[in-house]
Length: 150
Image 1: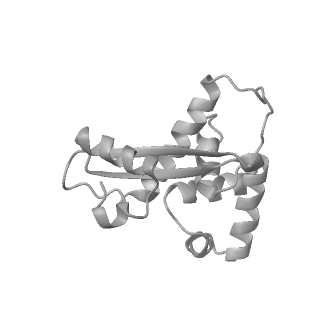
Image 2 (image 1 turned 90 degrees about the vertical axis):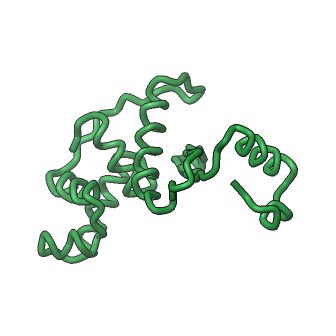
């Protein structure tokens, strides 16, 4: 999970984590950072003991899975900030664009498909992100899927 050369630049705690992962038989891994509102940072890590795994190849799917896990976890985990039960209503346009995001399409691709400008796509996606209090398209999509908004 790390070469000696790259471990020269790591802090002792980081080296310990890598050594423990190696002892556990893990060979490949990736950690997905999740940036939430108010500067909150969470991470979800994926690891494998198989040689033929390339987490970088599936990073967009792992990112989406990490957001889904995080969103589900925050629903069941106690929070010192309390839970917000606001009702969110997305416009049909916002839902359409998020469905295309779910298919892995870029704003430009969505614009071509729906015959609108890339700016129009970004405008509606940013509105959806604002309504759902998210900082990324992937998190927005994940948060919209859970309550059945899309």
